[in-house]
Amino acid sequence: MRLPMFLAAAATALSLAQAAAAEDNPVGERHLVAANPTAALRNDDHKPQVKVTIWYPAAGGSEEKSLDIGPAGQPMFFVGAAAPDASFADERRRPVILFAHGYGGSARMMGWFTTVLAQQGYVVIAVDNPGNNNFDKPTLPGAVLLWDLPGDLEAALEAAKADPVIGQHLDLRRLGVAGFATGGLTALEAAGARFDLERLRAFCSAHPDDGICRPQPEFPVTQAQAAEALATPQLAPEAARAGEDHSIRGVKAAFAMAPAFVQALDPASLTAMTTPVSIVLGDADPVAAPHTNGGAAARAIPRAQLKALPGVGHYDFLSTCSPQARARLAICQSEVPQGQTHVATLQTALVFFGRTLGQP
Image (cartoon, rainbow, N blue to C red; front, side, top):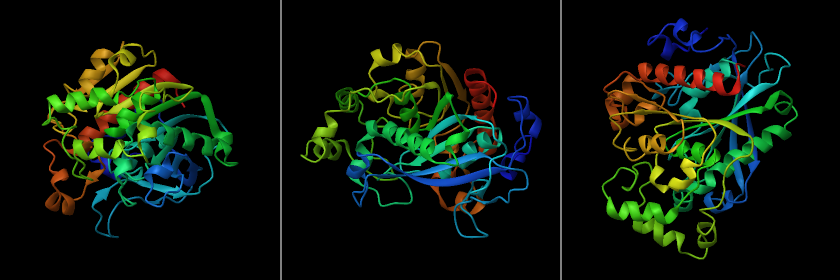
């Protein structure tokens, strides 16, 4: 199996080929716009739109272009590559993975994960969460309406199903969901966990120094600011919906990387989950502390699989930092080489989805 350059330095192709029935496809990339009514509350322009990126196995000979983030020739993050609007590798229907990024992140920032899944035969449907991504202007509603994030994935799936090119390649009998950090929370909600806003408030009142209770550096919002915003006439009706069922029908497996805000989930809903769940986290994560986040979810969810990576921090799950980024950005100060973290995560994900959804 062909590995992107930034992973090849960390492991041989054989290491991932052992984790799944390896394919060697170029990766295609298409962009859509989905409609989600709650996005109007979160987008700065108040439009009910969600930006969608789809990665998929492309036809041989498709010309891939760099997805790296930053100035040409001096990227800040090594992401991988994909061929814009390339033809599909074949006519087969493929298993589908819905993907959610972290707080203030983006679909592209997690391309190190999503493009490899596409290379291995999956169709990956990812979103940029309205009002909470690193391309658009952040908004307070985008930061606090976390229970609406599964709706972005559901809207993206509907847009993909309706697309005349993409739709015919989706095997919706084999539907999985994955995400990082807040996206890991989204994956758990999509698989059946329910949000409990009052539980989160009580936890943060008792543990104000927990990583999920402190203002996040990507867009700092205090617990007081969040409570005040959710009490406004604009957001109060949406806050009243927090505890509703936000699961996505048909999801057969959920994979969460360093899931955050797990204390916002109703414990009874976690113990009632029947969807297979796999969690990968770093045991040195100060942002989504394992004991109160991924570890807590794994203890509550029946038969959940948990893999803790020694010495790995929260931002190690982002795309690989360039030397320039490591010299300038606090989030790029990894103790463990990111390539090592990425390979371990991909191995776990490919085995998990291969077992729960079947090989592509």
